Amino acid sequence: MAHDIVFFLAPDDETAAATRLRGPGRAFESVTCRFIEPDSAIAEWDMYFEEPSAEVPPVEQLLGWSWPEWVTAPLNDGVEVFALPQRLTRALAGASSTEPEDLAGRWTTRLRSADGDDMTDDDLLTVLQGVARLAALAVSTGGGLYSWSF
Image (cartoon, rainbow, N blue to C red; front, side, top):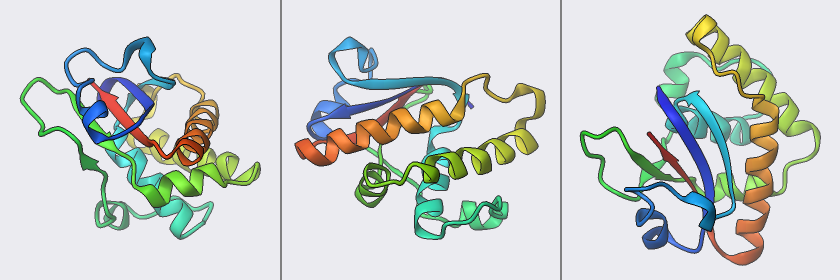
């Protein structure tokens, strides 16, 4: 589980990869959260928009889903930089007002069942709404949406 996660907007993979050592910092529009697994969150969000359901998907289905790609090769320091899939970025950008609410409910249920008391204290709806705002900016500017975590 990542300690610190930053979803951020960058013009391209090269710029996003350059954040690897220090994180995105204030130079990038971003949304932060703590104590989640960003790759499984991204996969779950993508699954939700491809196959909308309020039900938590079986773990096997989530594990079999297409996971986000690294923009930098992972090293042993625990830092990861992922690119969110373009279709997910477009889906988040065009989400109705109820879709983030439904997804946040489903995501919270899954995290609570997996992590119990160790679940993040972040308001997951606020995180999703912030990431959807970044997605809308990415679509309108032609940039990409990324996740940096440690």
